[in-house]
Amino acid sequence: MESSSDSGTSPEYSKTLEDFDLDLAKSVFFGNFSDGINACVECCDAHLQGNPLALNWIALDGHHETRNFVELRDEAACFANLLKKQGIRPGDIVAGLLPRTPDLVTVVLGALRAGAAYQPLFTAFGPKAIQDRLTMSGAKMVVTDAANRKKLNEVEGCPPVAMIADTRQEVVGGDIDFRRAMASQSPEFVPVLRNGDDLMFMMATSGTTGPAKGVPVPLKALPAFRSYMIEGIGLRHEDVFWNIADPGWAYGLYYALICPLLLGHATTLVEGPFTVDSTYDVISRLNVTNFAGAPTAFRLIIAAGTERASQLRDQIRCISSAGEPLNPEVIRWFEAEMNAPIKDHYGQTETGMLVNNHHGLEHPVRPGSAGYVMPGYRVEVLAEDGSIADFNEPGQLAVNIADSPLLFFSGYLNKGNKSIENGYYLTGDTVERDEHGCITFVGRNDDVITSSGYRIGPFDVESALIEHPSVTEAAVVGVPDKERTEIVKAVVVLAEGTEGSEALAAELRDYVKQRLSAHAYPRLIEFVKELPKTPSGKIQRFLLREASVGAT
Image (cartoon, rainbow, N blue to C red; front, side, top):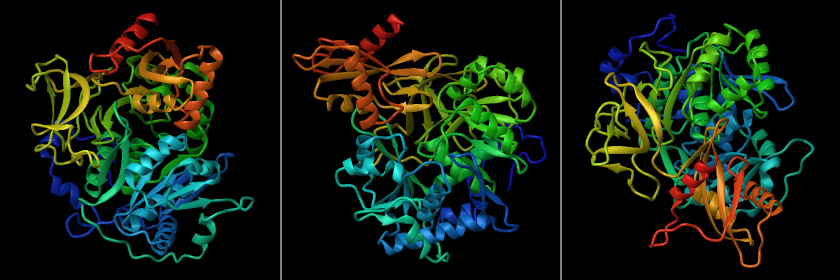
């Protein structure tokens, strides 16, 4: 594995920023972004020498399995052959509704080996969230397991399904028996070469209006992904790396699954849900030295006390935090109790990681800030009139497209490039920048809710609520929460003749959990007679948000 910090010393930030060269960044890849490249080859075939470890997996029952790069390549080739026999062609989209298991790695890499694109579906999604995303992408196949299969029964127009079943489960109907079909495939498959503009992932990101928007991620994103692992994460050859983010989301798919493999480094997947005890157990068991997660997880670790932390003091070399701003008190605690530097990183599905307090580069770190722009990008802070904001004045973080060779986003699927104006990609995030270039996150300038590192679109939750027969209208806002950053609150207008009660609120919470997802349900529900609206009928969520904040 290559790393800029194998020697234990890090390059100076400003020199790396000044010296960035896209051709050099591309030259380290096995393939060529113009003449032909395959992401599976970059993640497997390029790292076979010496047969190094590629995957540490902790199963739900706690047992530990490993895979090497040869095994990952062979399993991916079998799945690529399966896809080809099912009529999946280069450019088609294959979706995965799967937990964190080796089968997930096989499906992602096998789809990429076949020249297809992969679409993640978070396993906590309910039928509505799944249907919206499959409708958006036009996926040609979904791979899932027995635990999630029943959700697809409620998805209209569901594509063909391949189900992963164990020996006690029966694959019925027209589903493809994944295990049986894989057993008959050859581990030989010539990778389909694509070019840098061809689709690699079809992601989705929540917006304030309408269903989730499609974010096409092309193969030319790979240099940006790789740079973050070296400069932001600071991954070294000797590290044991664990990113706890779920690959059903961008940070987990990009930087927990694909990117370590891209550098020839083993990744870690843990099937079970996050708990403080299980996290400490895995860190100790595998001797994790490089750790990544979200501030919610770190705050829960702090709440559990110092006893377990002290037992792992000096083990973790560095910790990366992403998904929401990192509180300064979290930074102080991890330094004091574990002697582990924890640094805030900022990015989006559309851009990858963009602004970081880099572990792999030397620069000053100001606690509470997001850090400095990654080499390969140029950002500005724009005032309301579109001019560049003064230092320490709030404005929208914007990426200068012409001067950002690592930027891979060019517009949402079938929605054009509404987030691109006057040569800038507009992130929708309000920040401040000081005279040294250090950027501090202020907040979203739209209504997207950030809760426990998840981005939740109010429209999705509102739509799910309105499907309930007792609900006439609903508006959803985020309410500040010390543990989760924000929690989802729903303000609900009930159907005539229906009375609000705690029992009905509990029913609506469960309804959204089942229809949408377990992380996006409204923890707070308020029943009202009417919602505040503009003369044109648009819900004024900011009034509801202000009233909710004032009541806390």
